[in-house]
Amino acid sequence: MILDCLRNVFRVSKPPSFHPVPCQVPRMLVTIPQLLNPDQVERLYRRLQQADWQAGSATAGPLASQVKDNEQLAQDSALGQELAQEILAALAASPVFMAAALPLKVLPPRFNRYRGGGRYGDHIDRAVFTVPDSPHRIRSDLSATVFLSAPEDYDGGELVIHDSYGEQRVKLPAGDMVLYPGTSLHRVEPVSRGARLASFFWVQSLVREDAQRSLLWQLDGAIGELHGDLDPGHPALAGLTGVYHNLLRRWAQT
Ligand code: NI
Image 1 (cartoon, rainbow, N blue to C red):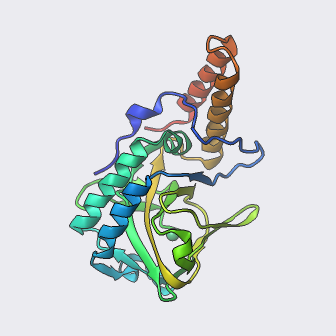
Image 2 (image 1 turned 180 degrees about the vertical axis):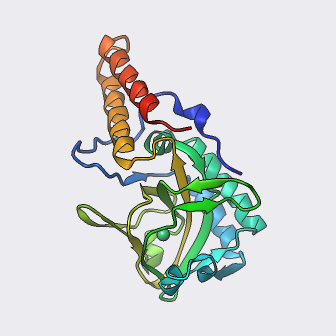
């Protein structure tokens, strides 16, 4: 069930939607447009409509359960496990995800639904997750949410992430994904109309420290930009790509 991403990591590629991140920002919040295409979203959404939803508080710790009011698919749900494979395949095919997360292990994606005022108050996710029915454990360096409902189909439901620059309010088109540091305090605002369906999961990165991973992401993006402007044989490209790999070699833990 764990996505083995190593085979895809060892190249610097130009993310299709790269926009430079200011160098002074040590923490990163990355959105990935269209991780799932409209057909995939429609199929997942339709199947999730018939799913057997359970109270989300069942999987929360004693503190989190006091602020968690949503529904989830059970971790042993056959439907959930099948749909998780679709998300994992989309992640493996996303160069932006690979470059931003530098994933070592990905927890099998889960699914949740907020409606009727459902919310999840401020909390920090647990640090280590156990993969069901396996000896694997995953450190949650990064948290991820894939939005499956169209924003116009529900009111509220923003993912609010606190970072050193204040609050970021995230509500993305269906099929889009956000990646943010697992250390972040965050919440999901009450959904006062309609339903908000999403997939969520955690990533253990090859590069544990957020600031180091962020620098690699910026460098990767800058090299990608240069690829568009310089002759492919330009020695600076080879030099910078070498710096990228040598930094990754210093910082990666496998
Ligand atoms: Ni959370």
